[in-house]
Every structure is written in C-alpha cells, then in structure tokens.
Length: 250
Ligand SMILES: [Zn+2]
Ligand SMILES: [Zn+2]
Image (tube, rainbow, N blue to C red; front, side, top):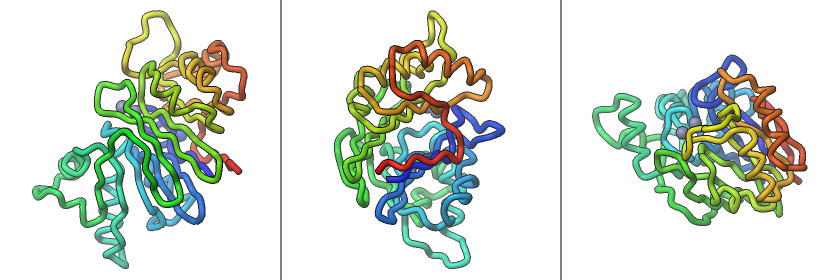
C-alpha cells in the first residue's frame, strides 16, 4: 500500500498544503480519505483528475469535504463526461450538505458524479482495502479510519479529541496519521482536537509503528507541535506531515 499526503493543513489551507486529503493506493486502486479545501489541485500532481476509484469522508466539516463540489464539476462536465460515478462513503447527510454547499437547487444533484453510501461504524471492503470506521470525539458525527491491505495498516484519526476508539483504530498500525491541531498547554478544549503530546500518547497506547502529525493548523509553530509530541511517551519515529510525502507500506 502506498500512502501519499495530499493535504495536511488543519481547518483551512496553508501556504504549503491544502486541507485534509490522503491518497491510498494498492493493486492499481486509488482511494481518498477526505477531500478538503484546496486538495483537488494538489491531487493532480500525483494522479490524473479522473483516476479516483473511491472516496471516504471522515466528517462533513468544510476542511475535509469541500473540494467534492469542484470534483463534481470535473466529473459531470469534463471533456469525456459522463465519467463513472465514484463511490463515496460518508456520513448520511453528505449528499444533501454538499449539494447545499455547491448551490444546487435540486437534491441530490451531486449524484451525477458520486454514488453516496452511508458511513457507519464497522468494518467493510473498499476495492482491495479493508476499512474499519469508528466514531471519534468531535462535535459532529466524525469517524477515524483503519485501512489494511496486504498485511499492512494505516490509521487516520480524522478530527478528534482524546478518544479510546482512536487507540483501537491505530492498534499495531504501521503508520498512524494523527491530528495535532493544538499547541499543548494546560486547559485545552476537550472533545475537539488533539495536541502533539496527546497524539503521541494515543500512538504509544496503540503501539503504532510510526506517528505522522497532521491537521497542522497554519497559525501554530509546527516545531512546537513536534516538540510537544516528543513528550507523549511514544518511542517510535515522529514527524510532521507534509503535502507530497509518500509512505510505502510493503
Ligand atoms: Zn478539520
Ligand atoms: Zn472537524
């Protein structure tokens, strides 16, 4: 399995990265985890515009799904349209919410491009991948993902505060993409996001093989976020996510 970080900026795009989007490839199948603001542009540095086989949306905050609107245009009106509808596994409101974001008067118009399938907690197959989704700790219906293929596993936190389910998702994962939205300090908001230290605490409990801190909010000093993570009791490798970074899990 090949994992490419398309977008790792938290809450809104930064100067060097779009918002959340991760490309997972195996056996020629290409799946996106999230398609946040700006990600559709950077995605085209790595694969063709029409080469996406499936999309999974962790939740419906704009920084995780808004480029679905632009991708609908590409797949509905592109030069060789109609293109096959892309399966989209997402919280049940996705079709309605994205149609509203697009400005469609008639729902569910985005379904010319996408085949929406309701996401619930559980384990299911998407192409060659086995996915497990669990509800995480965020103010809206939000999931983290565990994705396995060929004996290798990547875990993605989505957006979450401290969360026992996240530890289960990342148990013995080769790679943990964990959000680190906050600079660590006493009295952080609860049930919303994690600091680098909290991300590392979860990685340590899970026994993850590698921790990549992501959902990095542009107003933070990322060196501080990385330093925070070094104080979480995790003894594996830790690094900051970067748009364009590739991890080959084989
Ligand atoms: Zn977010
Ligand atoms: Zn969110």
